[in-house]
Length: 94
Image 1 (tube, rainbow, N blue to C red):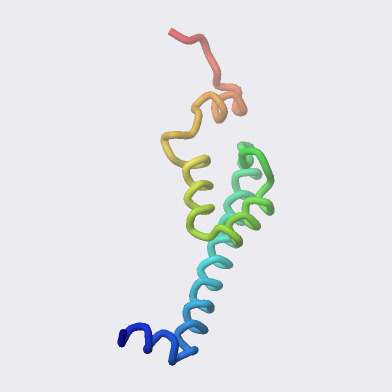
Image 2 (tube, rainbow, N blue to C red; image 1 turned 90 degrees about the vertical axis):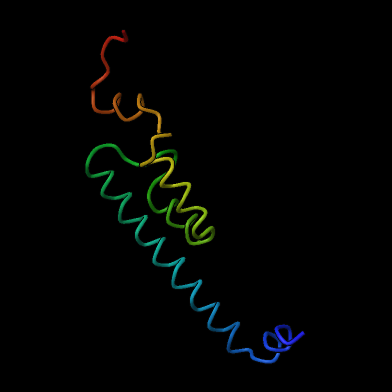
């Protein structure tokens, strides 16, 4: 009961949480746009959509969208053939 009173009695808690989440979302979105542009300059590009769309998705989805971006572009779950085919490194399969 004390926790409920603390949360409902002090609007500054909600304001500070909103500001914190907004800073995290904007920071992640800007980082992903920057990383997507870097991937484009390297020649691999982003998957499905451009870096600005990934940035907007991260702005709305936050950590979850950033995690999906990372899984698609940097984890071992990324299809190897997609990256290799774009760089002309596909060879015979043993």
